[in-house]
Image 1 (spheres, rainbow, N blue to C red):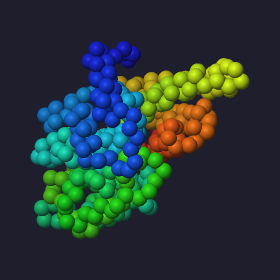
Image 2 (cartoon, rainbow, N blue to C red):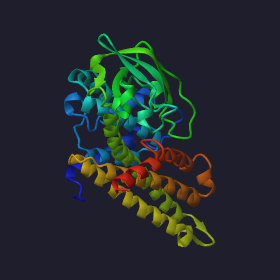
Image 3 (tube, rainbow, N blue to C red):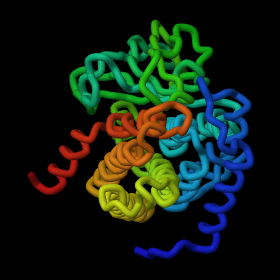
Image 4 (cartoon, helix red, strand yellow):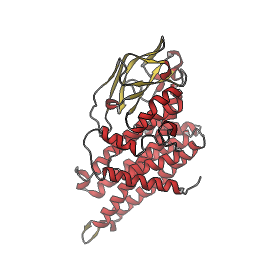
Length: 377
């Protein structure tokens, strides 16, 4: 594995940092992402990084995509915006790019990459959680297509999405091998995207329930073949667990820089608080964990770019980055003290935005189960 960035990758990183800061600066939002902001992300190329260029994307490999996403997370004060855009790209647009029919790719990917449309991944159900084989949403063959019936309990971007990647059971007798994936436009009769519910963090990314009642989609809206839904979902999770979490790597880098500046500049008892080991050593621990997590993440991207399954590498990376982000945010609260606890400095918001990282894309417990299985345990 090459530890050096190419000149093109370095230029993309710097250009993304500059562009994001120019567009949004240090602004902190309240509420969901707006359509204008979404189109801004499309203009910056953030909504189609690894999507083939012929469909409006950047045609980048996983490693370069992750490096751009890291820059996005570093430059943006709004992790919710980073999450919303990358969930759209990696869990909706990329499965369509990799498994959709030529006609479906041509129809859906250009507006998804440009920012005209917003995408969402609809798999989570109240009674299923991480168990893809326990889905209750059903898709039944009808003349010319499929009729979908069921409910999804937690759909990120759902309240504002234009296209949903819906996972439904087409053959109940085959467990997870009987699940299929469908692209469903918002204006399809029988699709009801419910309003956003309140949640802990990632405020820019609204989430809500999705209910499908006799929603009919054409046969070419099936991704891959019937029964490939579980494999398609796992493929999208490999993208999400690696590239999306590069945004958290960038955000933690920015947070660590703020903590170092705070510790060096704030004086108590006649000296900087950084002179106290109780302050300095936890920041060293953040540096250690961040650098290790970054290496694990780019190793996972390296494996994916070479066609490997990457189950072990991707799960280790996701686990390391997500738990490092929470630990770093908790350390930042301690370093900033009362300012870290109060709204305004952005530290408490960073803590709220890091906690979901240990839950979405498969919980930390699920990642440990995958790693244990890969180890032969």
